Image 1 (cartoon, one colour):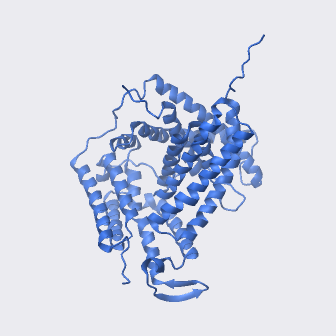
Image 2 (image 1 turned 180 degrees about the vertical axis):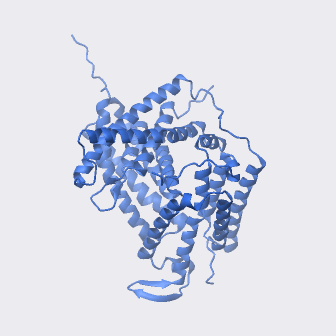
Image 3 (image 1 turned 180 degrees about the horizontal axis):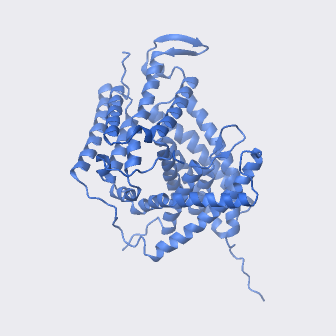
Length: 275
Length: 185
């Protein structure tokens, strides 16, 4: 389970930003990346993201696994696109420069390569920022941040409960699985698929039913403490907005503006070098 | 003069615990499927169960938060599919009023209702919402998206049909049936 990305305590300029600023930055950055298909904007955003990542002091070692995993995912996606629609780029850019013919309907076309490159970039630009957001935002501060950007504090609290109870649910799962194994339920690969399916049900049912019971306990406890009586609440982890937080949010908005402006400038989302 | 909030305390907790379950089952639990090297997305069965027990708002938020957490733990979110998960939770949640599982009733009629709702939910999520958003955001080829959607929709539907229905059966048994007490003469 070392592969799971989570918060890493550190002292960097990213860590010092408030959770709200990081959340806003992440959301705006994602929107900017979703809107544009302009190679220049994407390249600029990717470069900026990588610079932020390097400046934050995280080591390559810490994210190597995640990046590798995402690369595989991206690879599968790209192969899928090529297999299902080898001429998608031609449709988008309106010209066709064939490099070489492979077989049947498949050939290597410059427009297709360019489209697939841009598709990959759109995914890539979010990665450094997402990694920073995950690894440099204290989960306890997250609920406060959600509330601050306008999400109802009830929903923010639900997210906080989710983060708080993930380790508990994992532990429950583990305990139930060991108890069942002690009773002779085989969960290893040795058994046949159908047997294993049935055996995993032996864990799933107690896990879900005990979780449903846990909901009753927690909600009773919150009710007793008067949760939700007021319209607003305070957060112990909330940090005041500083100049650097405004700077980060303004920077994200500028990126978004550039992405939108380029769209108007190009007369569409695409930057077309083939015309 | 306090406005009655649509989110009760129980719903808030259900969202939190539901999202935690969705995350743990979706991220760590690899349940083998008959097709080699693929695993079953058991978390959609859980989402279906939570939708039916707690309603559409809990469904939409469990799907959204749970799926976002899974994606973030891998590195980067794929928003279109996250939103599709949320839509599935929403649609299956509409079955709640019709089924009234809280009163312990889960017979043939409820089984059919649940499966119709979850079929519609999966169809809308994976054959409409996810592909349309992927086209809007990434302009991916329609053929690829339909193939992906069909695969995801079909496998999620089957999982939800088997595991979700069985879980609801088990849950209904833990509830006390309405009118189960009778006055003795």
